[in-house]
Structure formats: C-alpha cells, structure tokens
Length: 102
Image 1: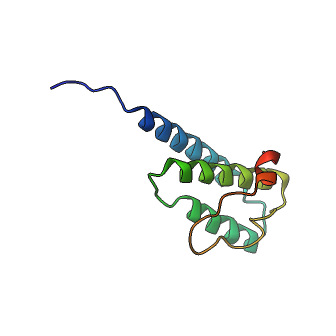
Image 2: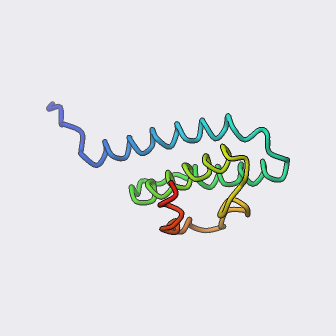
Image 3: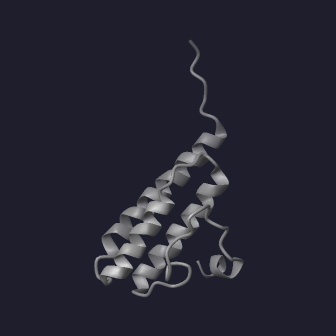
C-alpha cells in the first residue's frame, strides 16, 4: 500500500475547522454575561453555525460569522445580524461592509 499525500483541499478544510473550533470555544467562554434572551439567541446562532458541511466556501463564511459573533460578545452588544434569530435556511454571505470591519 502506498501512503498518499493529503489532498491540498483537505488541509484547507481542516484548518478552517480548527479555526472554527477555537472561535466557538471563545464564544462559549464569553457569553454568560448576557441576559437570558440574548444567551438563547447566541446559542441558536452557535447551533446554526455548527451545522455540518464539506463545502469550503460555506466554512469560510461560517468562520466569518463566528468571528463577528465573537466580536459582538467581546463588545457586550449583539450587533446585526445577531440581534435577531438566525435564518431557518442557509446563511447568506456576509455584507462586504461587515467583513471589512473584521
């Protein structure tokens, strides 16, 4: 049997997943100071972000959402889009102005 080198894409995906796990760990540590309704909203966003996908574009978008959520938690104010529940279906790509703030 030959040992095949890992596919280049798989390194990218595992890196994105590792970044996501680190972001979610920080989010989990930081949101306890919010009121009950905000904590529920944060938990719903976390649940939405934790949906499984193998699409690397989706994972990049997911990580941007997680980074933005962490920033909102750090600031102590849930900013758009986290000031309401996550969408039922797919996550839209983040607005370019929001991404620039990151």
